[in-house]
Length: 166
Image (tube, rainbow, N blue to C red; front, side, top):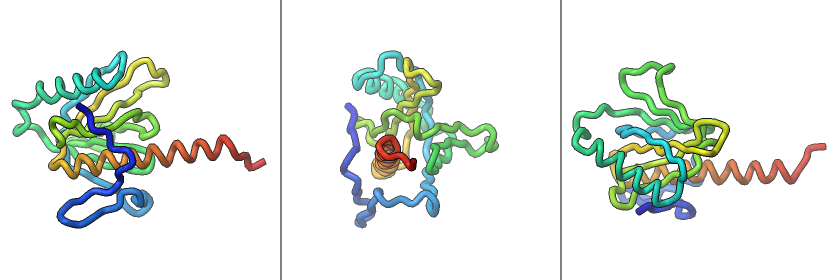
């Protein structure tokens, strides 16, 4: 099942409490060392299809996890990027945060972080991307930071639509 991390924005790691609501992207660029397991298209995305897809991707890659390369996952104010150690900046996978529709941690394997991404302008289909983090807390941290960015974007958009500078 999916564990949705929305309002619980505090996590305990190494005995200290860290507040992810105050990540300042102009000063700090959250970076994670992950294994990118891949993606599959979702044509009727619902919770059960997302769960099945995450589980299928993980099951298909499980036997090769030890030999998989690590990727650097970087979050900026506008995007999430995945880059393996051998790729150049032009070859990295870039996902615009405004197009990430849903993200979370897979409950059955809590080191799995996943997100659904709308690759084009039409929302008829979504990609389900799955990464394996080093630890449960790292996967939760990633989900919380992305959730917080999505919330900030929605609030900003709502404010812009209700207030005009003219």
